[in-house]
Length: 400
Image (cartoon, rainbow, N blue to C red; front, side, top):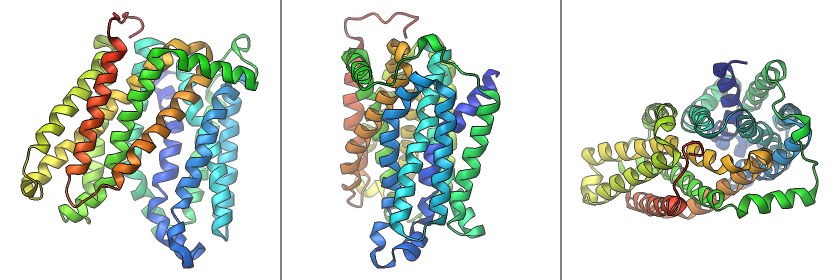
């Protein structure tokens, strides 16, 4: 498999999670009306049920792939995902839907987590960061287009058709992997799937200072992105009166910001991961501080909208410059247990990011100040963590 084909397949594995969440958003009102009309507020549990399954799967699929190999976990996870999506398509109650979504999240964790381990099996250092950076484009592109795709499917065949799209999407990636992806973990490098070994691996991973700090910095970078995603729609609608055009602005910004991962893939080999991450956080601090200096009444006008567009674009752009590099930094010293490391790093950073971002989503007061202030604080803390990571240590070229 050539590098272009490999990146395409891994990117599709990454996209499973985002597609499974964001494509469901337009379907919430119709699902509530059909499955739980008396308690419509329960419909969003469909999203949290998927995340619950994904969280459990994230801890299990990495070490499982260390024990049996990467290919069986990728294909097995896809099978669980497709079966669960079929059950969700057939579900005639919210309870059945929630159970199916938990198992769908469990299955989706397989391709997503193992994809990182496969990259680590094949690449190291800056080359690993370069591959991850290209794949991380998914984090900015899929959330932008998935809701529109979901809306088109609903208009064409109804909300249940979204689950058929999930099955088709996963089937394509599973067949592709089954036919073209070789096993990347040699048998002599495998580790038995035992609780004692798993606990020992977690202790080893978290005992490394660089891994701990990179997980914290990655959590903050993801929290900035999550916080913006949570509040950007009400900001467009209530402050700027652009609810109708929101998907177009959002999609355009995502496309522009997606170029950050490509830029990072070019620059990381020359300048190193630590330096690029620190620069991105520093620029986020400067831009957020400048925006906060504007008068709030000015921020509600057309010039304020332009300023907010610039700020939002850089939040997304910053994700492309930081997430892949921080993930690579965390994975670099734990290549011998890459599957378990991918599980621990991915699950901890995602859970921490969600915990940090959730209170920010409740702060909306009709202005942009709570969001921008929160991102500024997170960027300051993240930059401080990066300075701690490299203080007194000269980062070797090969390890950067």
